[in-house]
Length: 310
Image 1 (cartoon, rainbow, N blue to C red):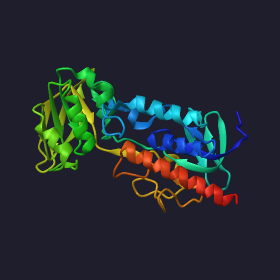
Image 2: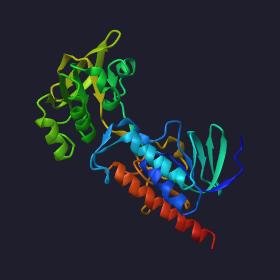
Image 3: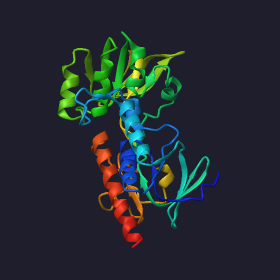
Image 4: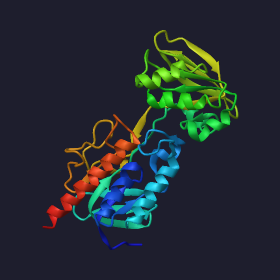
């Protein structure tokens, strides 16, 4: 299918940034196209309860929050296409975006493709993924009732995963390669205060072991080089995120880690291409900050199109 329409704005991604940009640009009458991806909703689809999004004193389930945002964008006239963008061409206007059903064209683009979980990258991790190795506590925690598990990492997401997993597990051990956590004090203190959680510092996991499923890990002390075997039933990898920017390489300015570099609040080095959310923000990475940036990007696009067309 060739979609011959030239959209005023196309939004790539459908997390809080993309859907908020969709709501604002739809209300501004721009009739945005949201290329939501095969799986819409971003990382919030992997979380259960969101307690820090303003307006929900009792908390709200991540998927429900995203479903609400999607319905809101659609209500104001956003067009949602559940396809991944495989290629972009920002060299000439209108910009071209290639997806599985064909090519879409747009006068302006907002990139909100977010970031994905990073893995350790050792062969045995791949082998046991889904058989004891996971990156999503809320997806898989339930399977580890009364089991002994480890969480690998030292940031907020590691603390969050560890705390969440204590609902199910018998014991949770946080394994971190440094001698202190990167996590915010409140998150670290909460984890350390939990009687089910213990910590092994200065240590990394070098191998996952087992036959059909995971039964243990090899731990290596980074100071002494000494290795030990630890029997466990599950391992959750929480070492950070990688921005989803592979399709933008060579099309737009990226920093060494692959995050899009904004030249102004939401502008990029390409006039007419804007960015919002975790694909440019490795610092805050919150639903509310992503949504706020989505709002700013939509308003910047509206202004940009107004200038473009007298």
